Image (tube, rainbow, N blue to C red):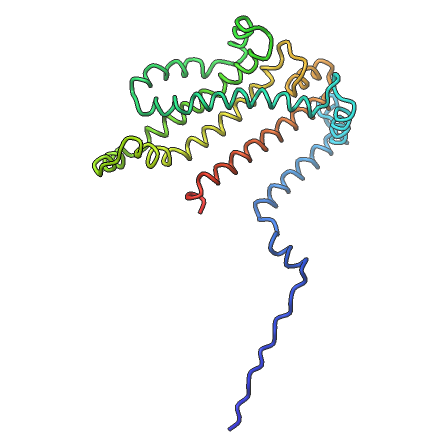
Length: 278
């Protein structure tokens, strides 16, 4: 009785470029995001092309691109728009980083101690809802019209989200877990670094992201008083001359810068919270 040997036919090898496309094809969410942006640009262009709204109020996308090229090559008041953006970014980061260094420990202290919370909670809640321009006038009166008053305004704007987020994250921790660790002989240092810090880190990072976004929204208010540089000042100055193309340019650059900063924080969060994203 003869037996037939099955001969396995090798699978056809895919071209290298096709394999790369299959491996790196965008996700459904990415396609939805880019489709949404494309629809917005198309609708924006049609509104400008058909002059449904005057170009004084809504310039065409090409006018905005020309403004980007103009301010990049010729500058605005002697400085490139990217230099203006870096000047603003420097102010934001100095104020925000200083607030993080000061208020993260303060938030932990407020969450762990009811007495410390009683000292600072109502002070922060008092000025948190105040419009930035309300107390910016005092900062200018006390510290002058230089860089210090601008950075202080951004610093004060960054404080409430971080302190509230940190203190609330500590309060949300389960006391049973902390008490169990103490009963097993864990020291205060071990409890903080092994239980409190890892348990509160996700909420702290979220509060830091919110704080950075809120600090960036105060940027224009910080740069409208006696400033001659900065992307917020550029938008404010362009509004005096009805340069809506420059206003849109500044707003888009500020928005993209904010998205980039938030993306960096999320990358750092994924590294610090590897156990959460595994």
